[in-house]
Image 1 (tube, rainbow, N blue to C red):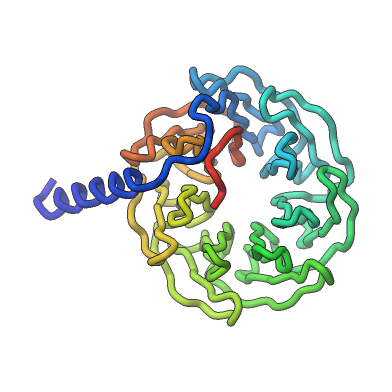
Image 2: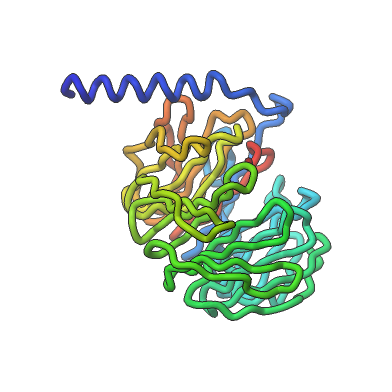
Length: 334
């Protein structure tokens, strides 16, 4: 390692240490650590249940065709697993891993999400090029409207007042804004190639868009429908997971096989996690803020990353094309 590279590495290590040293500990019971990790194997129509203390798969459960994403019900008691090709949502106890029910006739639910006020449930039809909006009372969903959009609706973000849902359109390289009260499209704007993950910065100031067909995050002033800047992270910039300190967010770079840490206040990249298996995708963080779990979509593995050191410390073999990952309790999503 040459001198300049060594100094850069040391500076990055010191920066990361400072970030985590100054971040207040989450307001949780330190004993209430998660024990069961749930991983969706999109290519095998199954879910892997992992004992987190031993980091071993203890059970594999068939759930339905192409489980891609998951979401907790607002009461935090039931995990919803969306089966895109199965056209249903399976209900699971997130602590025991037991299947508890099913919501049939949810058509092509690729990405799903509740609005912040829990009034609306949005399901993106990635395969059928549509977005379905449901009125929601927990897991009781009633279709309000199906909205046809351009190619491949992907990820979702909401304004904090629950008035607007934003949808990335991967194969049209566009971002759509939907008025939830009227269930109509408010506007559509162009983005970089293959937009995927979405994240709203604090105060609803900017939308961050993972540009998977390129190597960057597109920062969008959504109120004025214009790009503010690009944050270069790595090839295949894809999905977000906030650190929980209201200042930083991780983004997975699927092609570069790295994960970048972004400062949402300065809109700058402040670190990279490297040396990862192929295809880092969805992420989750333990409630103590110390450990990041990530699915490796192209490697049939789940990784465990030590956040203070930004180093991969373990990998766990799972099924084909692992996508969503979940456990409870977990770090705050903010």
